Amino acid sequence: MTWMEFVGCAGVAYGPPFAMFVFTIMSDPIRIIILIASAFFWLVSLLLSSFVWFVFPFKSLLIFGVVCSVLFQELFRYLIYNLLRKAEAGLKKVTIPNTNIEITNNKHVLAYVAGLGFGIMSGAFSLINILADLVGPATMGLKGGSSTFCLVSAILSMCFILLHTFWSVIFFSAIDKKNYIHILWVIGSHILVSLFSLLTQSMVYFPILVAFVLMLLNGYIAFTVSGGSCKNCKRVCRCGGGRTLNFEPSPSST
Image 1 (cartoon, rainbow, N blue to C red):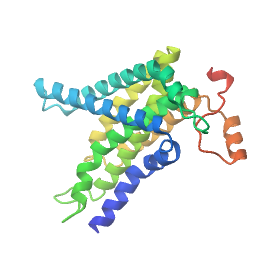
Image 2 (cartoon, helix red, strand yellow):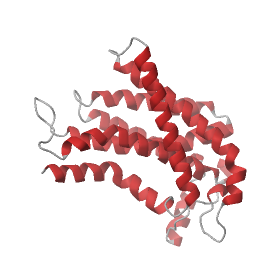
Image 3 (spheres, rainbow, N blue to C red):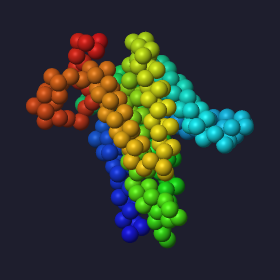
């Protein structure tokens, strides 16, 4: 039972991002480099937020640590944005010719890859200890704890991975267009869903509802700011999809 729960929770949390990696990133070495770089940036943000939490006398206030961590993550999201924008010219020169994947032709792809790197590392740190306990000799739910704690944690990890991907697309586009409302929305929704995740012990399912609603909303915003439209969706369905992430943006998004 322990290994079944381990495989199930790991599949719930990491199945969708793994599929995203396989179908949209794995075949392009440039995207893999950007993914690893963005994951490293997230690790540095975690290190700095941990240092601040350790230095300041607020260890009893978990909310302080959460807000501090979110602010550092958004700061390093901005830093990776600056790095990628400055490296775009160089990336165009090293893009492999004669391939159907042109990462530098669409700036939203850079945001997507960077956001997925943020999300994968965030999801790994948020769930790895729980998965380690699931392999045995017992499972969660003892001493009055909820038996669905592991599943809830896996679902929240999946939501955070996808949210980081959507947040990066919105954040990068907002900086390009100087849309400060979207920037504040990314930071505010990140803080909101992070704070609600603290309620998983007392209100097991409510944090999942909040995370799903914000995930769908951010996904829709990311879809629209990257030039998505019903017309583009019909075109993709008519052509049978494809492995590239590039599409012709709608006039309203330019």
